[in-house]
Length: 480
Length: 116
Image 1 (cartoon, chains in turn blue, red):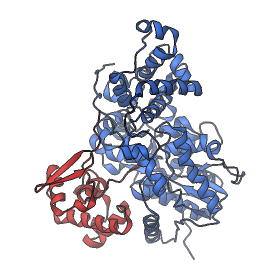
Image 2 (cartoon, each protein chain N blue to C red):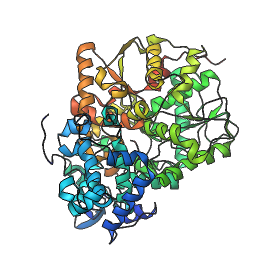
Image 3 (cartoon, rainbow over the protein chains, first blue to last red):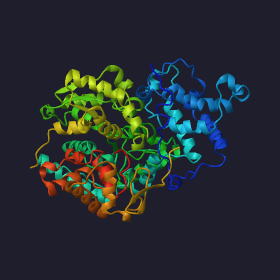
Image 4 (cartoon, rainbow over the protein chains, first blue to last red):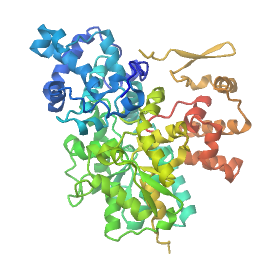
């Protein structure tokens, strides 16, 4: 494997401004005793997190992870080898928290957190999309996402937050969503969608907002209101709910599924963002909570939401929370909804497993459901379904290249290069099976592919939402 | 280290504050010359079609404090310029960096954030 030292050493996200730091309670500039504070926080984090402790202590430099990261494969920068990324933190940990590192640092690769190391932390902890592919191959189960999350939280806590993620979290608190979409704009957008769907299908499908007493609260990424192909997925969820006769609503208070608290590695921020969803569910008096197509939102929702904010008030007859793909899958299995594959006859589709669904959560009741549920739906709604190469799908899936809080324009060079392993696999099936579209079920994946496809000679609109394809094939009962 | 915002745009002897990505900090600084200067820097000459989109974005922003969602924009474009242009492919032809981001910048509006 070829390496190119410092190939992406120049690629860094913009720093958060003083106001963007202050809005989240972080210091507005690099604090004078940053070194001491960073080391203290590192010690605290390792004590609190068993996963981080394993990452600091257990690596035996076997090399299994070195060629598993999409950013390394795309950039060849050796710091993008997972082991090297972890070493940036491990070497400092060793220097301050181990006997040999304190007294014989040169023997054990222990290093000080100096200016150059700080710069590397900021650079390379923001060249990890926290997708956990490397952890699948690590014989001791080290998860680099734990390292980069901890690193980012330490950086923000000493005054070096990242603009994109901080700005987004700030908007969630002031406007209810990542986009900063105010309630009147959201209401106007949903009204427009009702008109569109009526015109297209002749069926009066509703997009209810803030309806007290609905059964289901649907929480979805705000990109679903704003961008393509995301909005086509939202239309698909609405069609399914309509056809199944489920009473549902969106909320302007929790008009965002995403939780960038995860990306900045802060448990407190994650909890603050998650609380809105509980508040909205209680306010609207719903019995069920369903999440739309957003990878990391589902990771947070399924693994942490209940512990973070409590969902005991929801109906225990349903998963708390539930994913829209699980809802649709069950409706299809029980015959409540049916599909007409011919609606997708012109499409040859393949499926991109989103990292946070594939490796950090589950779907449905059976092991591996996160792989079979979306595939079942695609095979039921499409005539032509093709798999990409095995080492790039299921639990070995490659990140889209824009996950983990890196979906920002100043990182475009990294995003384009990091997409290359997925693009290679996609190009193969385009050539061998004339694939026309790749389907995804994560807002970040959809935006990232729309942006990088043209760099690889594909049309920006060759990526589709899972529920777009499902919704197009859904048999709708004409209104009386 | 990536600099925090101290970027500017110079338009006819006026120095206007922008963020690191070239979006105006103060919307009231906007003029047609601002849009033309930004476009020229990208090697783009603004056609009447470009201006239609810029105007639609600004009108929507005045009402809703945000740029319109893509479906609202394509529908509005369709109403003004004909049904064959009511799609995002047409908008990407005009604004290859993405209609929301590139056209918002020329229109003096903030960049849409989030997973878009």
